Image (cartoon, rainbow, N blue to C red; front, side, top):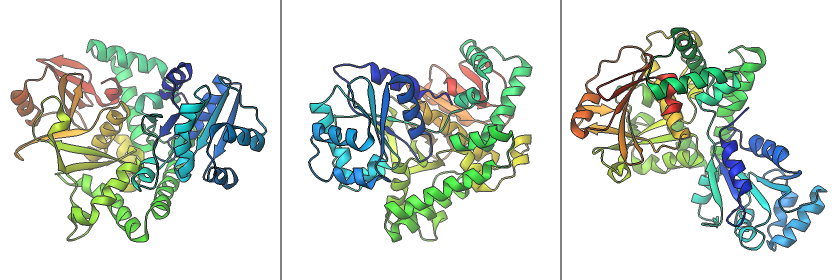
Length: 430
């Protein structure tokens, strides 16, 4: 599968004096290992791959002296591969499971910068937060890999032409031809079911059937739960699981703000705050903070006590919620479709690198997302269908007078009085 991160990896390879060891971070099963190994095979003469979670013999070697020259000689001997500067890619997979390997990246940076060292970490944020890890601040480059966004999904479906037409329509704000518009909506609804996890997309493409997808999604969710048990204490893992399991119910409320009482009667930030942070650091949820003011820079106006939680992949939310496949594919007026739509938009925006915020004005108006793009503040309203009547965006525009605002729905492209009508399938263009 073609991924957008490939351009970042190539740019990293081509750096010379200022190249640092690279860490590819992200939730489990988003494709970190696959993309690094394929990158190595395509761009290097050979690859030295070590999984530090399963290869305990090599992992134990880091317990002693982590001087790079010594480690490189050992890696050559243990893998039978010559390690040659500029020709070999060294991959340390699941690096969060080996504390000293993470620390060793600092010395690779300082003493042997001519070697290409890449690492992948599924629960790196969780591991660092446990405070026993010495993270090599300033000595590594970190990029985050998310599930496939909708454009990458279209590539996987062989729809490159449709992608180009969508981008052209977004740039011009001219309607897409109706046949292409309807095709894009059908593919968007497919994506709501399948999501962006590579294994789920592969399961669908193998037989062009949706029936196998929930089985793969269920396995991924089971793996997340296993991580909760492995990387947290028994008491903490129970709380983390309860918070995670509550997300569909949280998003089903009219007010989608995360409420601890939904997790457990009498629940509070004191009881569950650390569990939310664990889920966020693990990359399996997306946290959207509330702001009461929409000025640049919006980060300083974040209300840390109020937030929404979205699942990191919309396909996993679809499966976990239990909504039927036919309801999603048909576009029926099910109320939970609004939650799925918001989760989808959050996922696409996060993959684009946007920090997630929503705006609320004295509980009288609420806007789904507010983005900062350069020095511009952009209000984004999300509608699940073609009905787009709402006063919240009007209130936001009246208060802050942005250069333009965006309404996402199933309507075709258009623009009037600074309001851009953008179809939901084109969020990747924003």
